[in-house]
Image 1 (cartoon, rainbow, N blue to C red):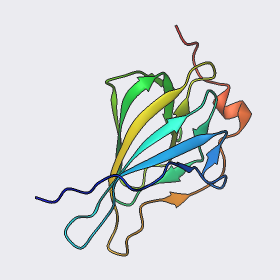
Image 2: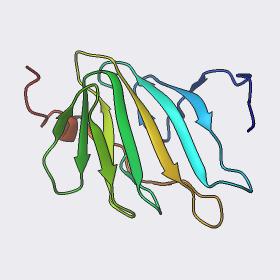
Image 3: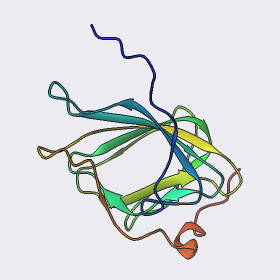
Image 4: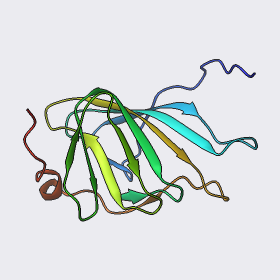
Length: 136
């Protein structure tokens, strides 16, 4: 058993990867013994990722708030606390907060053999984001 005391500060999500204000707290980092990468990701209302893929897929678990998630070519899904979303390896997708709510999710994935967690693409346009269904 190994206990790691929290010494990592909350960091702002890079603007190349996100639209709006997003904050990241590291939960698990890949090591020689594990490929697991996990982060608690805090999205302010309207904030979202850019389109991206993961070499080994990704699971997000919504912890609080209301969010949105979409795979390329699919409908935008409203996601709520307790919802789990799995994105297949190589599946182009985005996720983020609803326009009027904060959202926090736990993002979990395995890096590839070279340690790469994701390949980032274009930002989700306001038009694409605005196609979300109404939040009830």
